[in-house]
Length: 244
Image (tube, rainbow, N blue to C red; front, side, top):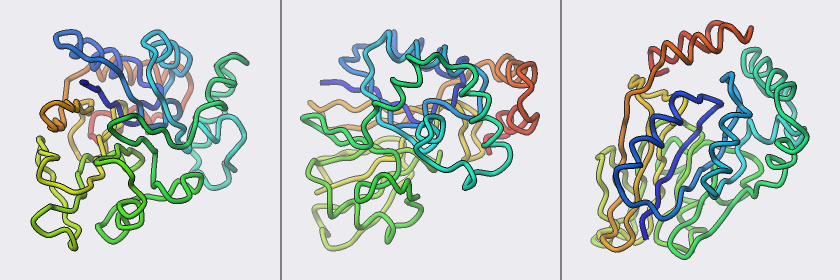
């Protein structure tokens, strides 16, 4: 089985299209998406349509939850709140119901998907250190979980040779045969924050037990222009060029 795993898309149509185009050249059995389909960007309906066309398995992120009234936007900064308000206006009742129906956690035969953490996934907590990863690693009932939320690609794991210690790597290829359990943050399709402006995604091959973290260029000018023309805060366009 070969999975493509997409992180936070955030209504960035150009980035999503570039990732999907890159995947056309290889065999992918299932697309997985780890939440925050919408928010920040200007093409929420188009992004939802692309995922639905491909029968993607999607879990709910905090921006998705906010757009359907499940998360208080008083917790959001002004730019994020403006994007939530815009997104609600752009989506049909069917799109909003699709977002509302997304699960917080989904398990396939080979992996688990969540946006932030596995314990209490509705709290949308960040994993930014090995200690913050430990509760999710302890809760993991599959060899690997794929996460998003931080927009920064990283793998946090327990190695077979030292199962009592939690470590991490930013390598672009991870061999799960060397780990007991692993959390792979696949980064962000639509709004990377690791100072690399290219769209991020991952491919997981269950036969080889390899996860590859990949990047692809996309038309940032086009997407930034879409954001500005939509009347969203210009900062949401500017940050795409910087990868922050």
